[in-house]
Length: 613
Image 1 (spheres, helix red, strand yellow):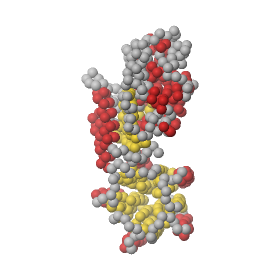
Image 2 (spheres, rainbow, N blue to C red):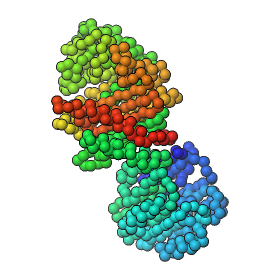
Image 3 (cartoon, rainbow, N blue to C red):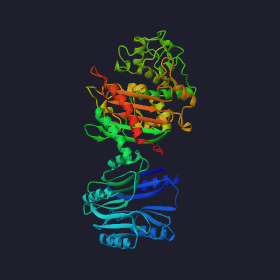
Image 4 (cartoon, helix red, strand yellow):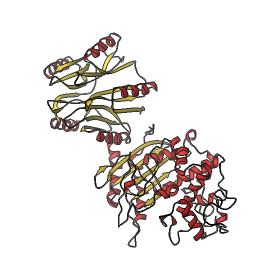
């Protein structure tokens, strides 16, 4: 589908600035709505990047200015395509779009009373004209109407006006059942009662949805849900009501039909029900193009706040591929080598940690050993990253070096080590003279456009903006850990979409956009000698498929990259832990992996467009 953009809740100046920016890069305005919000005129618009006839648009015009523009542009061969009007204390303001598209005959009129509009509607219908746009508004305590008709062929259509919310819903249900799709919806309030005018067409559609009577926050959620399921906004109308500003909107699917979307959602909801998941967010890309994303459930059980694709969650150990990519980029830039020793006088970290001299095996540890979990560190008697909570990074690393010698000779055995990635975070800091988080943001996330990444806080009070609440099961406490100390091995918080934005710049599918070259990517994803399925920050299978998952109390995460170009990311805000009674987390993680494949298969064939754009 053609690239498109939409904005709402813009004042007149912000709308003009947005208009100028988008038109400057080839977009054309196809829909506009003006409305009063708390005494301030606001505007919403939809732009599409496509070729077309010459066009012009105006907003926030008085009735006199609108008539002057109408006359002048009509004389130049322009015809009115969209019209919006709304009441303000200073009088009615108009916004409109004109273009030079050919049509045999057309007419437009504004300032019609309900009776005048009804009469004009009947006259035009009898003469063979189709109603193509309508806007209801209040003026002088009465409902007024602006409308556009054209003489053109097309599907069967129906139009209604002055319907209250209940009447509109009844009409909506009836017409939808008869195969009609809403073309235009106009909301307006007269005498304290919100009313609707609408136009419907009876035509085939692979899928559409429409909403009305929703506030700004609900509209934004609906917009995101539709956008990331491949639906394009056709019409948006903002309008003032006694309950505040509300919106009505229509979206239509550009690739996925309703049955495929429903099947994909049902697969996700089945998983959520089985494992008591409050909220799930997932995203799918193909060849570096985002083709689907969905958020289901709630961000917080106590408030039942709906989860959105904008919500961030802990990604746990999916942080490791990020740290590995940062190391590989530094190696590519010749700022370090993966064969470099880490500790001791010749090591990148020198003698900065613990009490030298170091154990002979500690002195053998290289950056690559840390990346491949072959440095010899073992989680016995427990994972050091969950021990000694009073210690900072430096103190913790020193404590491990002083009290736990490597359990195996570096390079000979693969033992999963969070601690090893904690050390890698300090290697990055030493090589860049920046904090781990600052460097990774600048080197990886900014080029990727992945702005949601941040190191998480430890407590509920330290929750980040747009971060979910985590819910423990079987007595687990999601807020009893040193998340910030886990930075390089498990501390990042992000959206599922931004996980794929990160992956897109290191996956090898889009060479012009990749931060890592082919040599670095191959090196990063080649299994190590101790375990061919463990590469540098990734689990691999030797066939070009990579993955990593993460688990913490209150969260699970998965990131996958397939050799066929498909990549998947998913996050949830709970987990079922392994216990003496059973391996619940292992079963849940296995089903989590399968869920992503199920959703991908239900949607197939995947869309050709790119929702990153």
